[in-house]
Amino acid sequence: MLDQTADLDRVFQALADPGRRVMMERLSQGPASVSELAQPLAMSLAAVLQHVQVLEASGLVRSQKSGRTRTCSINPAALRSAEQWISARRALWERRLDRLGEVLETSPPEDGTTGER
Image 1 (cartoon, rainbow, N blue to C red):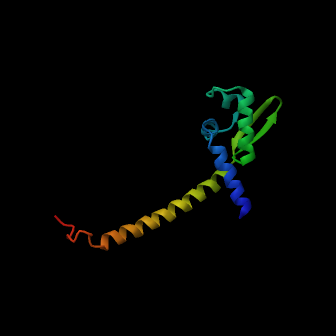
Image 2: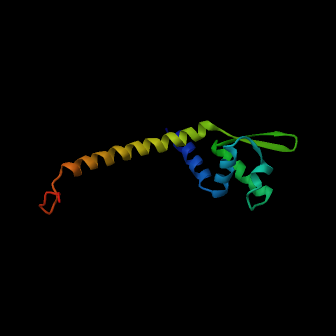
Image 3: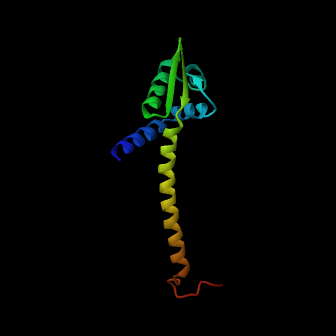
């Protein structure tokens, strides 16, 4: 459980940066070189490479080097773990809000009125 929590922390920390989210958005269209990832960003290639390394360390991205070109692709498993965590929280809050709605529907108004007009 602790390993899963640490992995999830790294995923959310990696996604906290807007530049890395832009890179992930691009990679959702398919594999891309570091140079392609850098195109829409106002940063040096070295800075982009550091961001790619953060994405790799989080498990969100895999890369392979062929000659001088490093090609990156999304690791769907890491995204699924974050999605599952978010879905579990969403389901919990939806159940709580549903119960609150039921309580409010069955409770009389505090001012003594019937609630009807």
